[in-house]
Length: 264
Length: 248
Image (tube, rainbow over all chains, first blue to last red; front, top):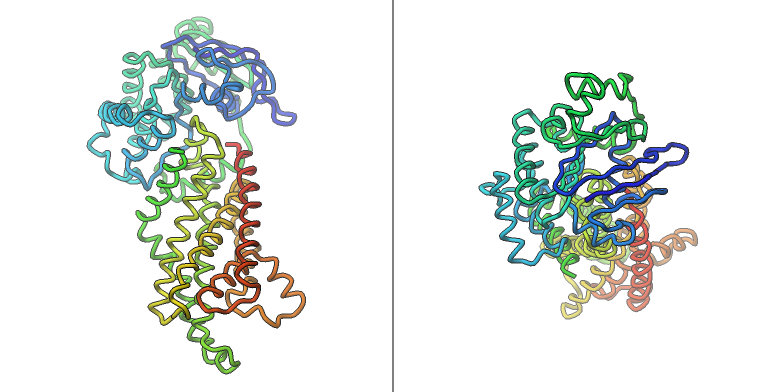
């Protein structure tokens, strides 16, 4: 479903993604792990047509996203690291706009929005403004929205960041449910290794822009001779802390946290 | 087409829903209208120019539209990181459609805001000279809104962080307002000031409104329309180009 071959992306002298290749099969849940600044988000941006790779090939459901941009975009849904809902609008209106932008015909759009809001337990609150939602509810709405146009692939970039364990569990059980019922391929990144261990069929670990290993969580633990995925992760990527210099996005994130009082 | 429509509708819904913001945004124009209108009124009259309230009302309407439309564009900066913009940029819709939907939405909101201030002006005692021509003022309101919404998009797409915002406010938006003839007559100015004011697009917008509302013009209504249309088209092209370059 996703095929990446020798993908390279550099910004000036810095090579963010260096010769990365992997495949994700249809219906699979694939976790893409790595320390901060390892190249996860850059890879997702390239996979979702937001960045152009310097070299290498990407295939999404058999399509090259560079030459068939709109066709490729119809086939995936994405939940970004930072929220991308319109807080002034209601949950239903957010779904509605998404459906129109993805050219989903009216009848199907309404039916599917209703189904998804029910699955993600937001149906009762559909007419409330999104800014009144909790962090977990907003995330669930974003994921429900990502499924609205029946994508073949769903990208989730650190979807559980800042959520409490209850919301995280609930979120993953919903994602799993839709993954099974609709055979949607899920490509996710997270910093919570236990989540990746539980949810993902296969895991890829990236560090300094290079893919270190790919395999089932079990195989990776065996390969490194460790008990948990977290230990395996540390064994593979070392325990040095990656201090990124704060870019403008980080500064704005800080600002946003200040204004929203710590809530996402 | 449906994408443009839904993005336009979104801007309108946001506007009508945030009542606090709506009321807050009327504060500044009212200050200018009432404080300057009544405060400078006696001096203006003694200079033989008639009622200052009459004179300044179109300027205050122009200011309202200027601020409202530039800010809608600058909002892009925030929206790009923490808002809905990202969602639209990965949708199977061309960037041009997104930009047009947003710009038209921002311009429409600015026009509504301008009409609201026009009503307040009327309540404060502003009276158009020729009521039959008054609706023509809307043409100029639309032109001002499009010029500055496009400018806002061009700037909002180019800035990297919020610090740039103050810079734009102090060195672009406020000078555009103060150098537009919104607050003072453009006739009989010194060479430099008259050159600068003639380079300010808002001058033509305010002058156009005065032409149809007060039968008082410096450039002439036809010139006003032509200049605004040309500047608007250029800024729309620049805005679309900058918008297409946004990276998130």
